[in-house]
Length: 427
Length: 194
Image (cartoon, rainbow over all chains, first blue to last red; front, side, top):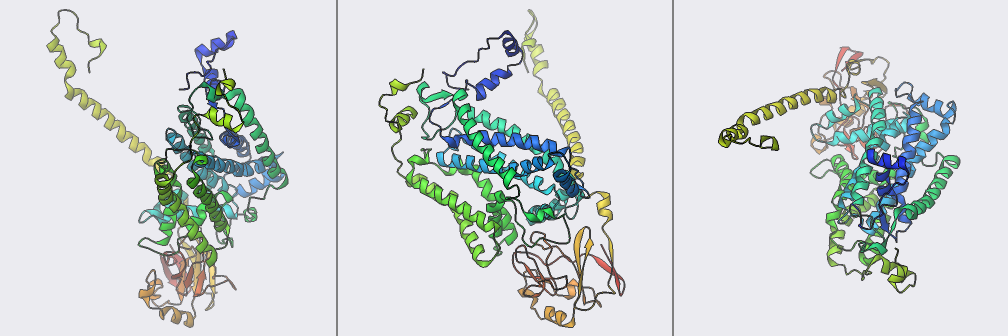
């Protein structure tokens, strides 16, 4: 579906006309990310991050397929094969650093993409399905990133696998059996490494499939915009190509610049030195931490230190998974009809507090579990849940939003000092 | 299930044909039977696909380990391997045994006496998995000079769980005592674990 004024695909060359009759793939692309997709004219640079996430996935798939040509998924030789990629394979160091830092870049742009959605209310009707599919993609990304981190079979890989599969042993009665089933043994070993490699190769393509659904669901109502006001007419939109392909290309350039800085100047900045020690099942590293992008969730897990009806360990695991599953209910927890936080003064303050709260959780997740940090983590974890379950519904019910602009065009013109919408209306 | 194909030829009695076409029982039975049969087949195929992820025969074959105790002095512990998991074997001193027995059992998170966690006549041999019951780290305290924690047993550096001299959980997030695997004494100085 699209707006009635969307441009129609009309191939002029005979070959393209012939192809369009047999397999209208160029038409699909034209309508999805070409001139056939009308987009609000007022998108800011936060709208780059969906395309950047897609680019990051493409980079991960390409570098990953190439790395798989040199990696050996066997506990006896996996660590050595990664070292051989680093030292012996032509440009292997580059491919591996690109893949490892590419994961960080992917998660970084996805976090900003999620933050954009929270700020501008992109999760609200009529885009709930876009949001739900996005949360599914996020969960798949977490699983993929975790299993990828296990593959080099270093100390952090091994103990990360031990701790994360240990979450399942918190389930009453069947937990330990599930854990043994997931590992294929009583501790992470060759069977674990092999199946993680298989799934790590599979899941990115599942992610790509869900992204297609995500974009499909987006294109039915069309893109949200910084005012959150619905598109009223043709003057509110511009074609995706060339307007936003060009704008996204600017963002892609900045993205690649940051990515290159990481790869070429500080490739191990976000990694952990212990992962350059081969996995040793008899010795735990002194301080186990996950990769930076999981730290807030790890902090929530660590915040439960006392039994209360259920064991502390089960509470921690439930809360950690709950903190993500909660996002599935967000479109119905926030009942305010106003989308953009620019017009919601109270919500905007609480959203910024939530962002700081997640940063505090990230700090606690990576810090030593001393008493001060545990208490800080408990307060921050409690606030995280309070934001979604208490603050958000109350704010939505009581807040008086600022007056919304009559249309996207009116907001654009007010910002740039124009007066007459008719004067700049796009034909 | 009337379709366009069922259009009556002129002159036919519609009632006769309708009876045949709309008779639900025969078709429904065949439909349900066919789908059920396919469903059973699907389950039969899915089961091995799930079961292949369970530990394979060679992994299970590593499930017994023999340990020689003769070299372990009182107060010492060794770290060995059982089912690819660390195994702690500790020769308790009389003071450590006394400390473990002095704790009122009903105050413990996972109530067990030292006698329940050792074999009769071998109360000084504490054999447990070296896997913290919280999230599976290897606790410290088996090696020479390692931190034994506030209760003189084991201390997990990951999230601060502390175990006493009977390897029972005393402090921190772990829910259970360190697991005592099945084992038997073959002779006073050798045990078979598993």
